[in-house]
Image (cartoon, rainbow, N blue to C red; front, side, top):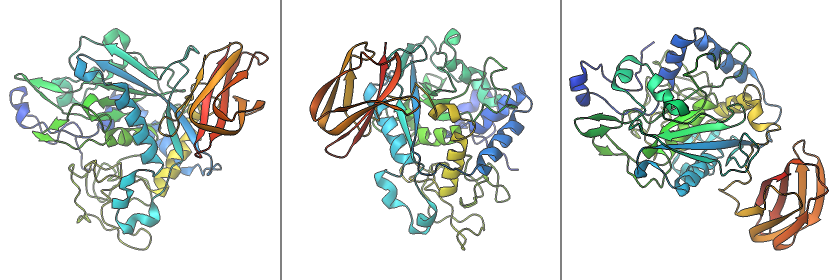
Amino acid sequence: MKKHLLFFGLTLISIQNYAQVVQTKKCATVEYTNYRESKQPGYLQATKNAFNLAKNNTSQKSETEYTIPVVVHIVYNNAAQNLHDSVIFNQIQILNEDFNRENADTINMRSVFEPIVGSAKIRFQLATIDPNGNPTNGITRTQTSKTTFTSVMGLISGDMSENETVKSTANGGINPWNQSRYLNIWVCNMAISFQGSEMTALLGYATPPANLPNWPDGTVSDLSDGVVIQFNAFGSNNPTPLIADGQNMTVKGRTVTHEVGHYLGLRHVWGDGDCSQDDGIADTPNASGESQFDCNTTKNTCVDNIIGQDLPDMVENYMDYSAEDCQNSITKNQIELIRGVIETNRWDLVNNNPAVGIKDISKINASVFPNPSNSTVNIVSDQQISGDIYITDLNGKTVLITKGPGLETTIDIAHLKNGVYQISFENTDGTKSTIRLVKI
């Protein structure tokens, strides 16, 4: 197999001249799995087992829309790295649009791929209940004395232990929230300094699915499940322009989409090899290698037979290294794998999970207060509430139905048992609000 170095594209001759040869690469997930294999022999085989299990799991819930709770850990050394809430909201919206084919730039996809793309029916929500059962906005902020979470020697050797310190409070980062219940995304600086300048060598990496019985997860203290993103590759409204290889790069939040794709089981579309390698997905065209942050639609680097024809390289796919402004889709078979992962080894993320967020901020502008409450709660929406308001427990059983016309209504919940509930209602504009409520 041809080896693709995701940290850099050229061999580093020495530390003294690394500034001339380091190239920014989008993703280090392959390096991460290789590093983890060195720490935990058998990890790569377990990854393959997880991939095959999910691939072979035919979803029986094709119409179910899953909700994944997200916690974003902002780990910053200076004010520029301490991203505003609006950037985080924007990135969550991008994830929802990209995985549900609601992004406006789908119109740019070539018609030849129309038969093979689709919506994953997955929603990402900032969590509103933390691991201790307390209300949260799903965002943590940690100031660190560390100027970067990447080392030059780590880039050379493939040792990712320095990157992993962002996931440790004791080492300048912050410990993850329960990784079976939350998608943890750490946002930090992974640039490297040389002669007074910073160079972005890595945009992000992610862990593939875990939690299988033969998966040795957690046996090594410096390895931890989740996604790590370079702070200025996060969100499309990021105030700090991402500069790499001396060029301004278009940032549209697709680095996070790419890494979350890995987190949900997807591999790079070129199979991390050449035309003889494959990503294990039947409807993604083979490619001889990754795109180089470009949108070259003239490439057809491998011969394959998909939907009865030889398709060109799919630079529109989120799992390529193409430029973010031409990425816009995932395929139906990629979606089947993602949903298979959710229905197997990431089951706890979406089932009976009290961490699932209060609202989908890309769709809803509604709130409940006080929350938690022991007597009454007020529901306020920016749109007229139409019809009934339903309160259900975590098993989906309806425990209360009440009328809720208007912009605000008050509900008596004193008679409910202590616990976590879900409030659901529809606004007159057709948007549906699902809000998490804690009764104490």
